[in-house]
Image (cartoon, rainbow, N blue to C red; front, side, top):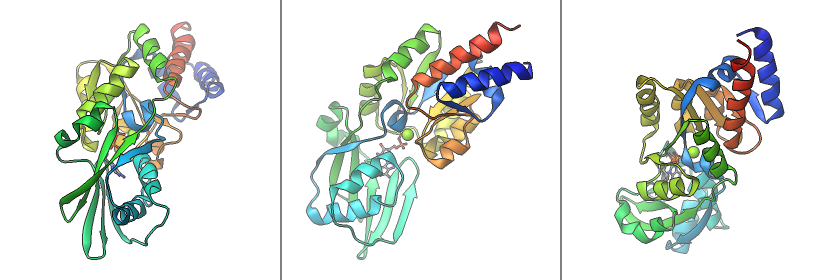
Length: 272
Ligand code: ADP
Ligand code: MG
């Protein structure tokens, strides 16, 4: 491409709320065939709220205090289940899984349930369920609702009309993933995906001969953002995601991907 075209594309994009970190990305956009999308914080607002929990007050306080130290979108919601906080020092975050902490001689885990089947009713509502364990014993759950971004559905419709295949890639469970996917019109879903597997999925679609775009917001998306032909991070996401992306969405949701494809087509397909 001519440098002029790259500059034109980049400034057009900036006006649309897209920060281009790697100018070549805007050129690659026109050839993208598959868009892999993270769910939590990408298709959804990443502004979740706790809608139900069966924890007692003391455990709520401990759990809220643990999650206060995490940047995960779910953690922000969970930290609000108590108004009082304890000082907890020994905290370890496991990307895509949850948090482990020691308090008062006991070990606490807050995160992904090992067995989702006991939470069927909550999952049917499309809630994300987080489990709390005390020394490996389940003490309760927290059900969280994360509204879908207002532009997600239209963005996915537009992608399809451009012959781009939208695919959901999420660490969340199958039921919640499918309900959210159905609401926005995504047919292809990879759920229960571990952070290192997100990159493997990128590779799988690349090996099939597709230019792959990955969009995400979390630290568990970083490797996939880097490995994709184009990586797009949500601006409100974690630093690690932003550092590994070619493009950053500075104003709201995934409809910006469609804008980027239009800009790429406009700038590079016409000028040959
Ligand atoms: P996504 O890929 O949709 O953005 P993540 O991979 O970040 O989702 O998270 C997957 C699952 O791991 C969540 O649904 C939740 O069960 C659990 N999890 C991850 N981080 C946390 C945390 N800080 N607190 C509680 N649960 C967490
Ligand atoms: Mg996410």
